[in-house]
Amino acid sequence: METNSRTISRTACAALTTALLLTAAQPAAAQSGWVLSHQKISSTQGGFTGVLDNNDRFGISATALGDLDGDGVGDLAVGSWYDDDGGLDRGALWILFLNTDGTVKSHRKISDTEGGFTGILSDEDYFGFSLASLGDLDGDGVGDLAVGAFHDNDGGTNTGAVWILFLNTDGTVRSHQKISSTKGGFTGILNTGVLFGISVGSLGDLDGDGVGDLAVGAAWDDDGGSLRGAVWVLFLNTNGTVRSHQKISSTAGGGPPLRNFDNFGNSVISLGDHDGDGVGDLAVGAYVDDDGGMSRGAVWILFLNPDGTVKSHQKISDTQGGFTGTLSNRDWFGTSLGSLGDLDGDGVGDLAVGAIEILAAAPNPGAIWVLFLNADGTVKSHQKISSNESGGPPLNNGDAFGSTAASLGDLDGDGVVDLAVGAALDDDGGFDRGAMWVLFLDGVGGCVRDPEWQCDGDVDGDGQVNPVDSGLVQAAFGSTEEGDICQYDVDCDGQINPVDAGLVQALFGTCTAPREVCP
Image (cartoon, rainbow, N blue to C red; front, side):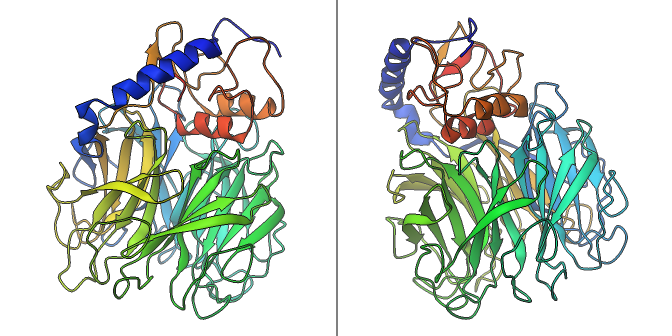
């Protein structure tokens, strides 16, 4: 394979990794997961000038887009599922072009009437309830987006749908593809009311065909019993249609044991290759799970096979998985999920879990739990972020802080991942208009700096980590690099595979000099 001067030897990589592990042992790691500072984005704060109406519920979902507009700073998509453009509660999403301090430089709205979207929405479709970045699915050099509309009526009332949006760099929609029980080549059986699309999560290229894949939740699926829930793994084509699929439920795909009304699949997020077997893994929320008490919630860690079936699983709840945080009835732990990369520098990925707490006996503002994981999916330790707790922002009861959680990569350039958290019932400017909080986190940082490189994940050396870079890595799957180098082989393990593409996707918008080596 052709290479360039932007390489690093495996010997140097190993030495730097050793240095990183020594650094991780220092006392600074004790503060990992705390909030160093925060920035609010709402009708009245953060430079956002978009018009939000009462009950729009901006912040119900969010996903990082990488550097969509090419200004060197990561951007963010945010859902507003009760937006009334075109009709009652049809839904919308906002593309926020960010500054490094978390404020909004500019924005673009996508709805039934704006942003170049020509798909047909109906009243109460709830378009924008879930969002997931797909990287550059169609290979045009611009990131693409999956959008859930879980009340879509294709095939039956509230059966649900997912829209694949192929974007332009200004945030408008160039084209789209709908996936539902009647469209997009999807042949799975969806019964009426299963809420397909209530969650969406990119899986990277799970099956190794060079095209990104997608997990979609259907939280009211009845496999095995009432409202137990399910997740569909969709193996995509570059045009956004479905090539094949695999269902995961209590009766399909090796799914975990579930109980009635668990609502498994209400949230999903890729964990990358968490157990080191070369295959991506998945975290799934079951926010109405009753472990320890009514609707306290749970998260399932699913270790996947390349065909989308489950190899093994680990539950995290009030009574399982080593989690020692205090949950109360109706906390809805697992409302949202966000991947944090390796926040504490122990070599294992970590996880943000939302618990919005709005129906608890004593309503609270909501919270994010930062879970420092072991490689087997159990919890090593945790940190709770809430109103003025662990540096959390000032919140009001009923804000639904934790409605969504999305990694922003390293927005401010301090070497530590930052987090966007939704508070969909925040009242800035009016009733339930919603808000987003950008949290600048404390942590070890992923890597040791190497001045010979500009930044991690910048495969083509253009000073940006974006979908072009992940596309180059995907195109190199199965190849080997000449000599003692690590360019496309981002994790320096001797293989160019979906793990490397996933690492690049997690770094979208994070390009800072000097480069961080061996994530």
